Length: 202
Image 1 (cartoon, rainbow, N blue to C red):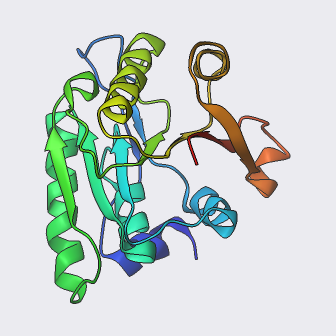
Image 2 (image 1 turned 90 degrees about the vertical axis):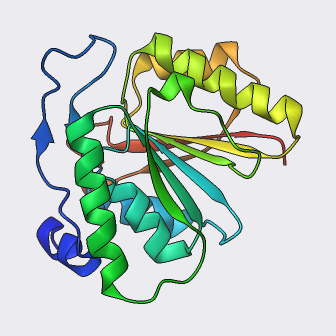
């Protein structure tokens, strides 16, 4: 299926990009993770219905709906841009109208990622370069604080990871690189087309 066909399957609209003009330099433009990449990731990385998945900088929430549709995990999308948040809410209404859903809740919060209060039930954290390394460091710090309060294994999933993100995760956190998933057809042309999954605890 192409991008449009996959959107139609989920009854959502997530294509395109959005430049965040007049926003802080700490926040990057919206661009959805390609469905091709998501299919590649989840061939070798499975989620459970009991997982709590957080999509930071969710935009129009393609990843959130994909994860909920395929795994039934509880999903929270975090988005600070008002227009993108509204798009996600409209997508949610269409998605819910498709059929009776099984599994966990799916919800969206409009807030800055660094202010989001991580719930003890949340254990999978997804990032497609949504913001600067400074904000990323703060968010990972919040994840670690949450784990200190309620011990559990957690994964951080990076798509198209920047050198800054990777260096921080490798050198300044207790996370260990657990798996690399290359998006085969895209990786041949661009070696950033990959996922890095960092894990803390077992």
